[in-house]
Image 1 (cartoon, rainbow, N blue to C red):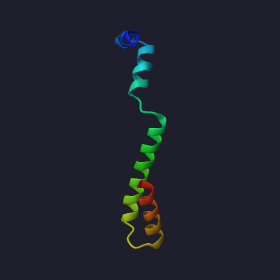
Image 2 (tube, rainbow, N blue to C red; image 1 turned 180 degrees about the vertical axis):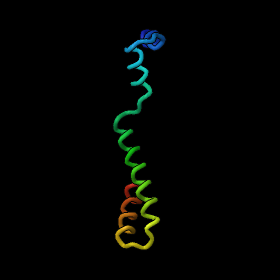
Image 3 (cartoon, helix red, strand yellow; image 1 turned 90 degrees about the vertical axis):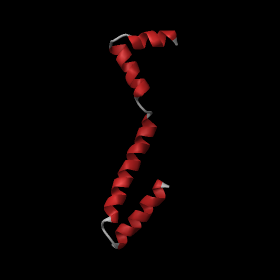
Image 4 (cartoon, rainbow, N blue to C red; image 1 turned 45 degrees about the vertical axis):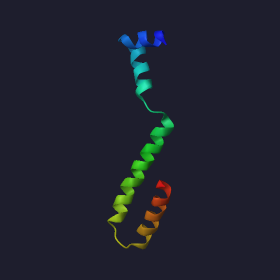
Length: 67
């Protein structure tokens, strides 16, 4: 642990890589969060389409996936 703290205090490529790794979220979580954002954007667009049968069906699918 002390070695890790000492490395973080230095400026250099190794310290930079370590900081990025610590600050970055795991790949799987990033993928899930991006999918949620994509679905929310699509949901809002579909809400504007009104009573279109296909849009309402897709909207229902999106709501299920977001649950």
